[in-house]
Image (cartoon, rainbow, N blue to C red; front, top):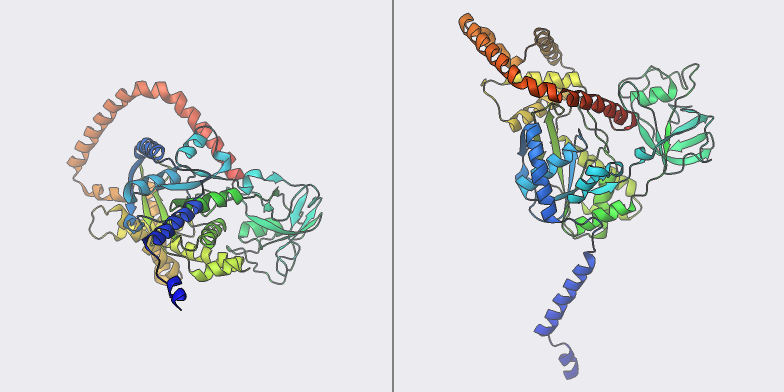
Length: 499
């Protein structure tokens, strides 16, 4: 008994010191060397320089809710809508560093990592991502959907070579762009033969279903209105397509896991590509895989997800304005991590994507189309009861609330009538070449109007002659850059699957 008591005596200070040293060693082992390490002073200097460029382009960039961003611990920032692949990243990184004191590594397309962009991405520790659409090549023959109502995942071809040098399981099938809208894409689940494959999920949307069936009896969501017709449109010959091999993203996930495990921040635009639509695109699964995978490897890392809304006012115009809104951080329920680890990955990923989409929707302004967005913005300007200029964050909040209200009550007769009246109001303004904030000047005294006309005409003539030498010298540069930018935009739109 005495010997047993002797063995059970409490450990001294030396043993507790040894345990602490062991824990520190284990933590050091866990903190592996990152694939794309961040050098703080390079990051800060680069952002300072490029931030001045952003200040020249944007008249105003306002952050909203930056106090919600945690000051420590790993964070996955999910941002959208993704209007511009370079500007969005710069605005997000600069806002986070300036307003929240956090540095963030962004995911960037592998095809962009060359020249100045490649050098710049290394200064801010960006993680290059190989995208399937960047490796897509035209496939042989044409494809169609033989049974769109009964078996929408089955795709057949005419003159195709699936599995014979073209296409592979887990690869991607891309439909062509049309009328300025890029085509849809889907993963290949199984190759049934040289002229038959099965997709993981069916295509959705009017354009995709029209391309694969040749039918016009489709609503805006891609659903067929004529249920009696089971197959294709008479005489339909199929559509062209592109195929891309499976892209191994192991190194990307390792880089993300390392950064999050070490308490850093990672930013991603989960829509998968830049676009100019007025609503969020379907989110890619990568953001959910990164979050769930990081927690599966390090359950106690304390990962949080922060939604970020990139709200622009005339994003492509010089001296435009932007609001970067940060939503409430949230943690992933342990239940989803358990599902991810126990052969229920698809269900866990799907549920997390739904949560992320809802969080993003709360910090962005979405509308079904451009006309509706213009109507909502006009209604917001008319609603302003004070006649004063509203703060930019309040403008975004009003737009969001009006958008949600319109979506909920758009079939109400009163809302329909109001929408029609606002559209007529916008049309009259366009006809008169006026902005609605200029209407107040129409009530000025005739002598005041004439005085303003003379003053501004003289000022315009003076400034014109002052600017004329520079205009002549730089006009070739302006013309050349305009032509090149249009050609680049056409090329990017033709090769994009997100626009």
